[in-house]
Image (tube, rainbow, N blue to C red; front, side, top):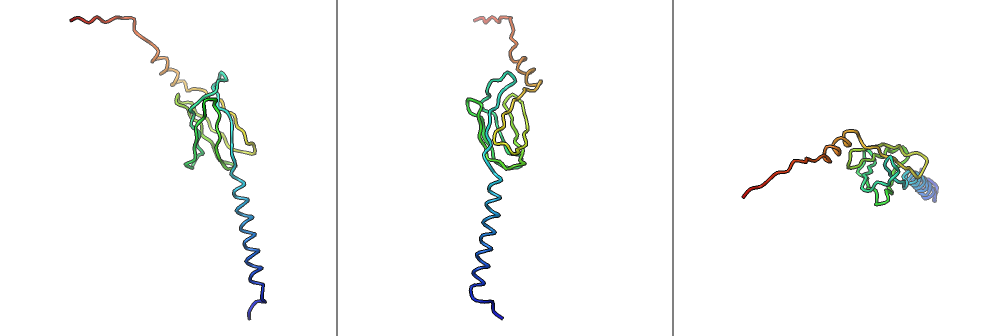
Length: 126
């Protein structure tokens, strides 16, 4: 028994529309997330790394602390700075996530250690 003529074309069209709808829905879940990263004093931080956890998608903040990255709802953004400060943000319904990074105490201690200097003078003789 053969299907009526045109039935096969209708099935192909419906299947194509279904697949198009599903793919558009999946693409709509990934969106651009933006924000500003600042330190605890409210100063923008440049060069902060932002990674989407469990992916190879990443970016860094510009000189004004601004970033823009593509991430899906439910994804975790990991922020990390050169001084060891880190933060995690889960992407939800919002398109903008501003983050404040607090340096780790160990990073402050190493900075303080590098700022100490000696008042002793060494003399070179010929």
